[in-house]
Length: 210
Image 1: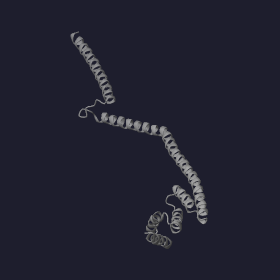
Image 2: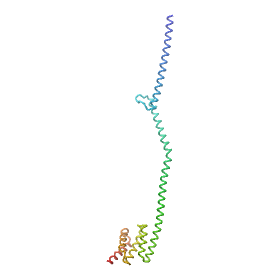
Image 3: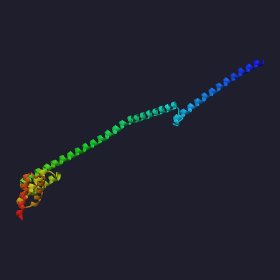
Image 4: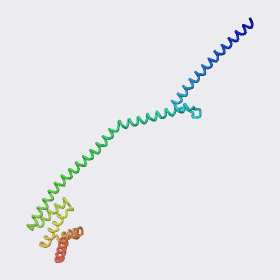
């Protein structure tokens, strides 16, 4: 009986030890599972110690970083695609507005030039009539009006010089005014022989009047 009881006790003891080992194994698995979750949380929060991290964990970190970079690039590209039509529209309207303003300014300038040029031609034509009629004062007045519109116009300056020269030769007046214009035009157009002739004529008249 004692031998039988001893054998039965050993069997029971072995069974109890197996159950205990099973429980310890399950407990280790649960702890491993909990540690994995903690590692995942650390990865998500960016709290990772590179020295303690396993190769699998580092791989997950790299994948997460790459994934976030892709998302950032996608968001940036999406923003550019959404706002690029607006930028293009603003740039187009800005340049379009400037072009319209420039075109309008040029148009207004052309109108002003056309009006002034019509007046200029009238003053020149009327001055020529007075000059032919030997009304030197009226001719000088009209030529000066033409020069007020276009100060650098040679034809008006030359006609004014002729009027002063004729007035100087016939009435002995305004000789110095004519000579001043002759000297200025001769410097600007040294190859123009007509200017030299008028300048010479005025100098001789001034010399005779002394």
